[in-house]
Length: 111
Length: 115
Image 1: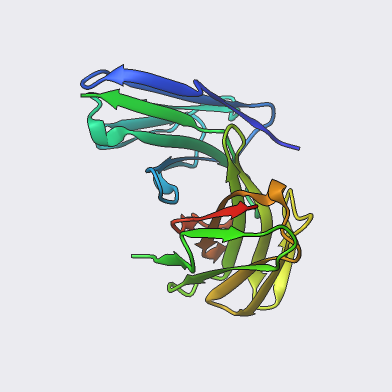
Image 2: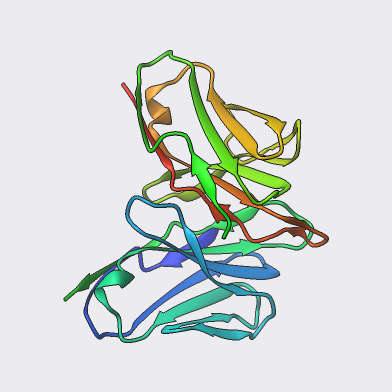
């Protein structure tokens, strides 16, 4: 079945640094999603991308839908301690009910 | 705001027990989902329901069953819990749209330990 490769698995950064993480797939998706999960909570949607090449921002977060439709990246600028958590990418296709999730990138931010 | 609630945040059960995990959403969503989350594996879909009394198997349905008697409530049942079902269980709901499934909203999760 479809699988997503998300990297890196974890990141340890200093407050104020920029962060980049990405997701690749062996098959195409029509929609890419990025979620964040705070410790002890369920994932919350950060950004949804619906069109190849689309670049979307949400505050300090920017995500792009790859031209090939097989990849996406998420950037976080000027990280702060509350950015700590697990970031999941997810892919979905029109007409289906399945959303495929990556394994997650665990982000640690040192103040 | 969409609210998805799960009946328990933490559960400890013994091998062989029957376990019920309850999920309720308050936004009249047609679709509801159960996932399990394990380190390094991300979220894996157990079951999906697109309407009352309707269900579809996900990627890992073995050892689980579900019940959707009311639109707002979706239950996950472990008929005979086993230690390999120790995990974090996440419920989600979404609107149904013509393209398939809308954005999913997640509950806080239930962390289940089977001894």
